[in-house]
Image (cartoon, rainbow over all chains, first blue to last red; front, side):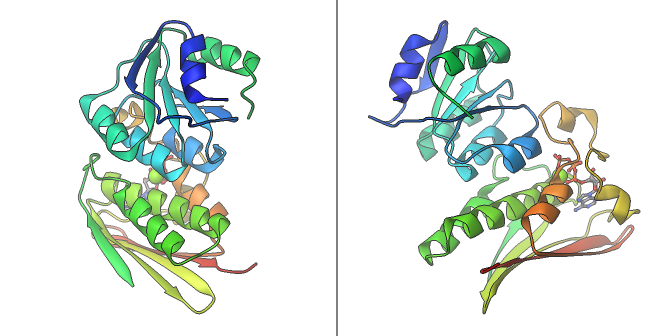
Length: 112
Length: 137
Ligand SMILES: Nc1ncnc2c1ncn2[C@@H]1O[C@H](COP(=O)(O)OP(=O)(O)OP(=O)(O)O)[C@@H](O)[C@H]1O
Ligand SMILES: [Mg+2]
């Protein structure tokens, strides 16, 4: 599934860093504890989290996460946005909370 | 051998060592699964040096059949290593926990994703963590 399609179909989305053309994702993961995400997220999955500080980009980069979706309307810190831009990681906020966002994503066919 | 210094509570750069090491291993043609293990181990050791160790030096060496990752700091060290190795054990202060660190999973992750692990520490003097990842199982 194209990341751009996911972002279009989800409600209340603000895109901070647009996905690169045609990038796709099939898996998803959610978590706010960074070591948990580091140890358990499948590589290449999209990541739903309420953490909005710069180290999120470091974890995303290492786990080859192409999209970080900040839930519950959380805005990224300026450093997180910069870092995502630099590393080519798409970054968006949704007004949905993590549970609702994951529900929608699952219904779209994103799996773990 | 390559090595990098990490600074205390420098969250802006924290993680760069791990991605640097991962890129290096990838460019050397190391299998993705091994690169993945090495990057998790490096990231956790790096974050611990940044958060708990007062900064430190993280080194990686590739030789023969193994990758060795060594994290050395001169921070407070660990009083009770077997306790620190337990999942969920953390002394991280509240402001660190609010950032999503302090789950007490860093050392357990290192243990899980490495083939050999040694921690040498003297309370008040710092610690040296040495993790080995075999290139073949
Ligand atoms: N370099 C270090 N210097 C001093 N103490 C350390 C160091 N690394 C780990 N510790 C101690 O061991 C504990 C457990 O470490 P571990 O990495 O498992 O969890 P954490 O860092 O607290 O949380 P997480 O890694 O999940 O974000 C730490 O809370 C700290 O008390
Ligand atoms: Mg840790």
